[in-house]
Length: 113
Length: 115
Image 1 (cartoon, rainbow over the protein chains, first blue to last red):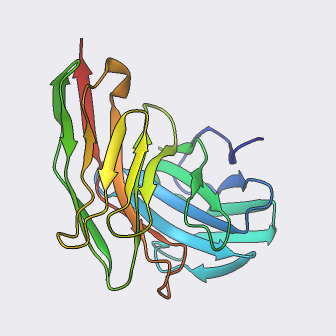
Image 2 (image 1 turned 30 degrees about the vertical axis):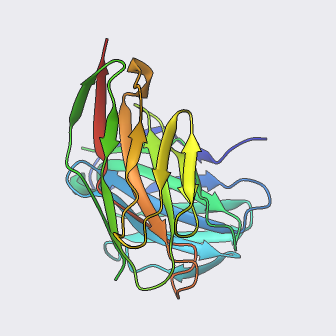
């Protein structure tokens, strides 16, 4: 079975541009998580969804960040406008609601110049 | 709120040495405990888990025992290999709480194993 799929794997953009990161969870999973990883702050949970509904977005750093899950097989994380301090690796993870193990994608390395 | 504290790294060992990475936690409920591993350039992978007190999780020669009395979940391996070089994360999820499904991670410990 395919694992969690993220695209793109690498993104380089200029400050002020819009960035969209994409995630396809494991088929059948109904919880989805977005994380950000940096050297300074470690691994941070940004937002998570259960059954396509956002449950906790308290980790979203500011209004420039938004996330959607229009259906069970797709989610996006958007940054508009992007800033250099947004440079990080962004991970998506999915799990079965009621089962506590999360499965991570390979991540998207974002560089904002 | 829930929190996880790991021993600071980096940890550098020679091949075949014994490994211990300490992890302690604070949680209000009855959490499940995890160790995840991140190899260079990859996402996190579940290494092992334990869901209740005194459970021992094990995988690939690694072990950790859920100690409720000391609120600890230390990772051990008897003989490390160069291929074990990675970042190790301790984590918990409070399945019975309002944050159901949400993982709380420690800061990660970098392990480097030399031949």
